[in-house]
Image 1 (cartoon, rainbow, N blue to C red):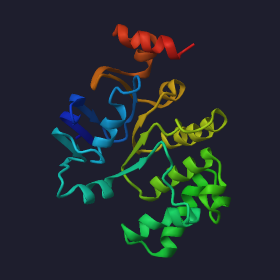
Image 2 (image 1 turned 135 degrees about the vertical axis):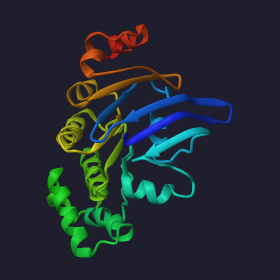
Image 3 (image 1 turned 60 degrees about the horizontal axis):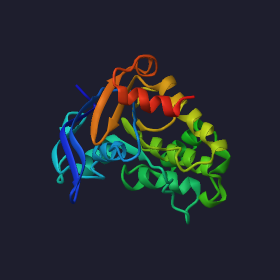
Image 4 (image 1 turned 60 degrees about the vertical axis):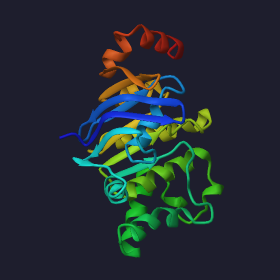
Length: 242
């Protein structure tokens, strides 16, 4: 059974038809990377997976359960976490409080258990020494690593990444990618929207290319980067891989 399934998903914003009959399945533990030009519907596809955007039509299933307005809060909270382009950390809370808030409020963990979890994942992302500081004192790369640790604290089966390095300067991109490469070795289902082709090549089980709200091509990284079928994919890769 697919961990994520999109069935004939359409999404419109007014007259703008952003997603057009998208059909997609992601298996448990799979690392799926979504690539394509800006405005192709990549981020909207990921945001429909946790109902941050509600499809105009079609169906979304998470771990076999169809998302509806009635159940979305519980299903999404129990099964998915998301890492955004902008880090979305609470600036008035310490790093530790940012990480313990959801486990305590949503998952009813004790303060002790939530803090143990937070310190564990801060260690995973290499920032255990930053527990007591405020996010604004950290670099962009450090803040994004904290955001990843926060997502891990929910202990979700699925983590969605929406261009997690796009707001970072070149020097800090690799430190975030290194954390994601480490995570990819775990049995976590990951869906990553990114322009980082080296990451896609190294980590993905499967890559899909989107344009104009549709999936144009899907395959293994080896297929994508050595022998793509679509001329449009060849053109795209030719421009960004030197």
